[in-house]
Length: 195
Image 1 (cartoon, rainbow, N blue to C red):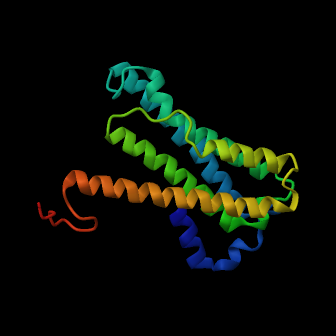
Image 2: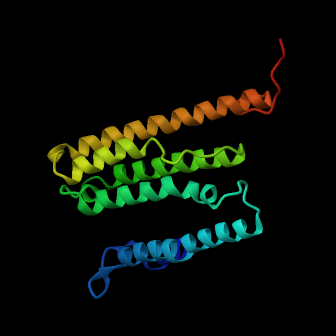
């Protein structure tokens, strides 16, 4: 889909994204529908099928199906909360602050997935609910209930700063722990000098 979008833009020009394509819909609408459709109807069922198959073959890292499905809980709840916020936002937050909102979405999902990967690599059980979900649920509730009012954009900026700082902190901590475990300096393969 992405390659087709690049080829279309290169061949026709950026104007193709600014004019209605079919029945008053823009190509960007079709692109979003394709991306969501592929995720829901191809990727998600394939993931569930892989977990089911691994459970039947007893090749899951952990024995129970619950532990196999556990990594899906936080990303799914994060997706649901963010979707509810966008759809029910009285201030139309996505239209007012698209870059900031998408930055927050990307960083939040990155942090959740990075923690899942580290848990998988270290054979530890991931937490059922990522800690981002609790403040996000409060923000979403306050936003859709109208409690935030004109402060919705400010709260989005504050939550984005919190999520970004937490993700950077997590990356630094994991990097430090790995460098100590592997006895190397960060961004170098040279061994540390033993004292």
